[in-house]
Image 1: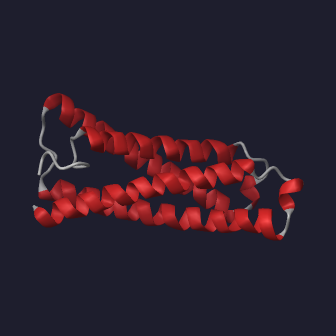
Image 2: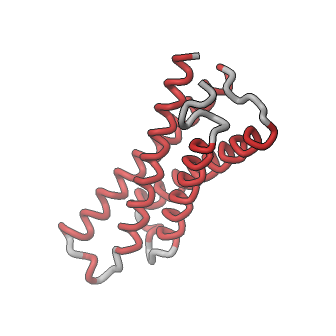
Length: 151
């Protein structure tokens, strides 16, 4: 199981975690530079959720890097269970935030036609990057769940 793609301490896991962190940070950056985003709860929820996702993914990327450098074993059932729980919690929070923000962005751009008055590109990019971050978390959580069940 140590060579399973996406397992803790593999290059693919490190790449997953770094990409999750980058997409979450990009989502935060685009939303934070949007004028008036703080007036909408869904957008604030997206920023908080992506910040949590960034911290979680960056922490696990550091653990993956540690395992790759020191050849430590992070595939113990207790640790993998913690990774599964953390991935599922942050993944569900991220999915909720991205869905709510995406719905608000569609409301602004398609229904209310506010994108002519307000620049919606930052909103749309933030939601897109948040969705990409969530998708990678979802893949990681499935790999971790598979490892937990197989271990």
